[in-house]
Structure formats: C-alpha cells, structure tokens
Amino acid sequence: MCGIIGYTGFEQASPILLEGLSRLEYRGYDSAGLAVQLPARTAEPHPLQVVKTCGRLQALIDKTHRGADLLGSCGIGHTRWATHGIPSVENAHPHVSEDGSIAVVHNGIIENHFELRRELMSEGVPFKSQTDTEVVAHLLAKACREAPGADKTAIIGSALARLRGSYALGILFADEPNTLYAIRRDSPLIVGCVRREGQTISTILASDIPALLPLTKQVYYPEDDHIIKLTLQGISFYSYNPITRTVADITESYGAPVTLELSETAARLGKYRHFMRKEIDEAPKAVKDTVQSGLNDPSNMIFSDESLLSSLQSIRMIACGSAYHACLVGKAALETLCRIPVEVEIASEFRYREPVIPDPRHTLGVLVSQSGETADTIAALRLCKSLGMPTLGIVNMQGSTLAGEADHVFYTQAGPEIAVATTKAYCAQVAALYLLALRLGQAQNRLAEKEQAELLEQLSALPEKMERILETEPDLRRLARKLASTHHLFFIGRGMDHALAMEGSLKLKEVSYIHAEAYAAGELKHGTISLIEEGTPVITLATQPQLLHKTLSNMAEVKARGAYVICFSNAENALREGVLPLSDVADHVVSLPITHPCFSPLAAAVALQLLAYHVSVARSLDPDKPRNLAKSVTVE
Image (cartoon, rainbow, N blue to C red; front, side, top):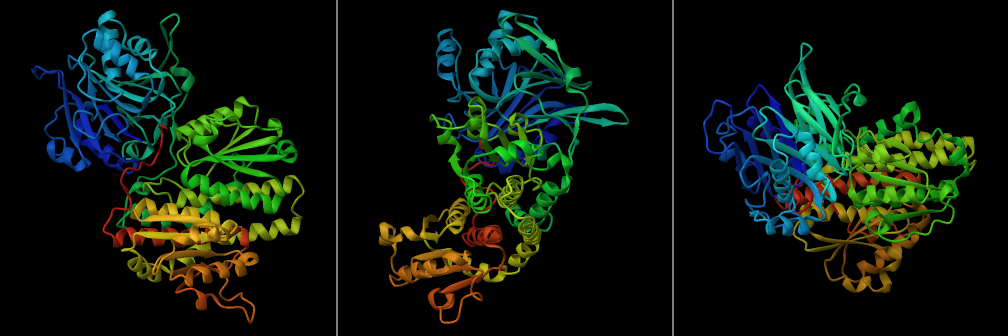
C-alpha cells in the first residue's frame, strides 16, 4: 500500500526522491518522509538526515524546499498508509535506529512485531512510534552491535530471519556511503540501473513502476528473501542461509534486466484534470489491446494446454474488490457459453476456510488482480496450488508475485493505472475472462465454429461501442449534478446486470463517499424495498433482453414508492410493440449500444464509471485519491 523510492547516484537525491514519491501518490497514503546520507565532507552530529510530515506529499516538498535543504546523493523516501498507529510524524517513515545510523522504509506487515518490540524494550531499546516497522531498524542495529564489522548483507539476513509477515524494505546505513539495501517478501519491489554510454551512473529502487519511468526502463524483479545491494557500480543480489548464517552472491542468476514496455507519458495527466477520467478514455484501447493480445500473441494466449482445457470440469475464480466483480461477470459468461460450473470467491474469505474441491486436478483456479501483489489473492493462489489445482493468474503487471507463482498467466494490456479506483484495468479483466470463455468453449466443443466466430466478431467490436458511450458524457455530467447532493442511492439489476450493479455501486462509493448499495432486483420484495422513500435515486441496469420484462416490473415497484428511477439500458429500441417503454417507467434513461447480452456489462461499465467520476467532481472531491483507500492492497 505504501510508496517506496530509493536512489544512489551522482545527483542530489532529495529532488529525485520527491519526484518518485509524487508518482506513487495514487497508492494512497497519510504521511511522507525522506532519509538522506550526508555528504562525506559534511561535519554533522547526525549521520543521516531524516524529515517527515503528515498529510499530503506537498507538505514534505514545502518543508524541504523541494529537497534543496537535504544535501546528499543517496537516500530513501516513503509515503505511508496507516496500519499500525495513527497518522502522525512519529509514525511516518523512515524509521531510524536509536543512534540514528540506520534508516528503514517498509511496505507490508510485520506480524510478530509485538513480541519483538517487548524483547527489544526489555533490553533497553526505546521506541518512538507505534508502528511495526520500527522493530526492523532496531533489529538491524542490534545485529550490527553483535557482529561489528560484518558485511551488511549478513547483518540484514540475520536480522530479517527473525521476522514473520510480508515486507518490502529499503535500508540505508550511515557508514556505507552511496549504498542502498533492499529485500522483499510478498510485497512489490523493483530495482533499476541507470546507464549512460555503457556506464552505470545511478541505481534506484521503488515499490511500483511509475516511480522509475523517468530514470530507466531497465529493471529487475527481485525474488522473495533475496537481499539487493545498490551502489554506483550497479546492482548485486544475495541469498542468506539462516542455518549456516552465510551469504551467497547470486547476481549472475538474474541475468539481464527486463525492459519495460511503457512510456513515461503513460503515467502523466496530459490534457486531463484527473487520472480517473484519463483512464476511462483509455478503457476502449485497453480492451482492444487485451483481446488482440489474447488472440495473436503466442506468449500471452490464454492456455495452449489443450488437454487441460478439454478436461476441466469446474472453475473457481478468486479475487478482491472490482476484480471480484469482474469475476462475477466472467462466471455468467462462462456458464452461459461453456456450460461449465463456476464459483466465485472473495480471496480474503477463501484463504481462511477449508474449501471443498471435489476434483482439484480438473478444477481451474483463476486468480485475478490488477497489481498481481494483492496479499489475499496471493495467499489464495498458494492455497489452490497446495490443493493440487492448476492455476491461471490474470494480472496487469509483469514481474508481479501472482504472475510468477501461477501455473499459467494472462497479462491484461491496460498499461499503468494511476487512479485508485480502477476503470480501464477492470474492463481489461472482464475482456480477459470473455476470452477465457471463448477459448474454453472451443476446447470443450461447447461452441460451434460459426457461433464462436460471431462472438469473437462482437467482442472485437466492443471497443468502438465503448467509445460511443463516452459521447454520452454531457448527459451523464448533468445526471451527476442531480445526484451529487444525495446521501443514499441504490443499484438494482438481474443476472449479469446484478454483477454490474455491484461494480457500479462500489465505484460510486469509492470516489463520491455516497452510501450506495447494489441489490438483485428480484430480491426487492424480500426486505430491500422498505428502504425506498420519496426521491430515493434507484439506478436500474437493464441490458439483458431475456430479463427485461422482469426488470421493468421492479422499476415500476420502486417508482410507485416514490423513487427517482434512472435506467441504463440498450433495450429501449428493442422492446416489442405493446410493451411499456423504459421512458414511461424511468425518470431518466441512459441509452447504451446494443451488443451480445454476454458482453453488455463491459460496455455499460464505462457509463457507470463516467457517472461516478462526475458525481465525485460535482462534490468537489479528488477522484484519484479517495480517502482511506490504496491502489495496491499488499496487506490484509
């Protein structure tokens, strides 16, 4: 959840660190800080300069005069999202050892920090914060005292052998000039090398790609528990054996760095006011690129394992948040087109129960995550593998933990998604699941060749229809202004539209803070309808023609009780003569382009995203940084 940046080179570190943190603001945070090594020629009582602030990054920028107050060419920076301890300067990172000689930034959770804290306090170590991270700085200092002069990689290995939990750590030692150390376990971390004319001029570490893009596209994705050393000469990797307490140089095993296929401008606003709006515009391209990649790129085709696909008997889809809602849409498509049973699970629930999988070898576990670093989803993946299930990871980030551990991986082609509330990545996930349905239907002979060709044609036409929805923005903006002052709002739908309603409700909640709930329209009479009052907005989704008449009845029910009914539908012109038209039941109709019923939720999602965005703006909020939320949920 937190943002980490580190730099060592020949330029002043602080401005580079601040720029890197600004590119990580989308991850969500409540405080920020820097630690920089003083230049060797500077005589100061404290070996490391540490500055921390609460609130937005701008406070840290102002306090350091854009970094000009902190001299030095090696340092680490951090934006914190509170887990242990309230947002405060004391709890902000970096955390330092008692003598100020070691600084640490951390993303993740140290699960045994309470017992480690008690142990260290019993030895006289004072604590200044409420965080779990501070124990890491003190453990490192203790290891240094117990083995004076020992190599820092061995110090790090011995100290971190005591930790349980997940972490990405950036570590700065005052007595090792121009050197950074890092290590990860179940949390994202990337390291890169900046070269000019064949020579290394700086090395950098970060928790996500956008922070590195201005400096380099040549990166490594470190494996769990490998210690990374970054110097002016380059990057080295080490493994630590806790039994023998020895360190081995494994740099050669990493080979050449990976080249990022991303442009720096992809993480820039350009002409847009907010990233969320920019990324809604990019959703059609994300879907188009994802579909084309699945059809044409041999390295990214969903399953070349024909024998596995043809023998599958069931599917378990597991995800969190919007990815979970994408899976609900995928379930409906797979069951409709392939006639194969599909269950969808919330990752945080699945991982802590004892799931019954009748035939694990023939049950595919599909794990969906934009970042590929979602902690609960990774834990669910490992549970699936331990049960003997084949696994497919659907992710948007190369080099992510999920991509590395799943048996098969499909990369969605959404590109960097900066806004916390997902838009284009959600659309790309749904498109990937549609591709899976078509591929599985082919492998199991559930789809005739002609039917599959027609479905592929309609799927390929979706991006153009999504672009047509963008043209309805003026109408959605007017509707958003009408909804901006409401306190409660409801979404209803049937079948696939219920899954879409859940995502629409979540999107509105995330960026507008309006209480919004989604209900299966057929459940209204079972209690929900008691919540409808005069003027209550009810957004109805009606994209499934076979359920349209039933949905019209539900709209009439809430309208009769005073609801202000808004209907998103592609069926206004498809109603048979003599049937009550939508405009007679709804107070406001948003017309959607007609497509295959299985694909309608993807087209409609863009309209709901635009509505949520404009409600947020109408309420004078920042849709890119919703309160209390973070982009990549790497802790439970």
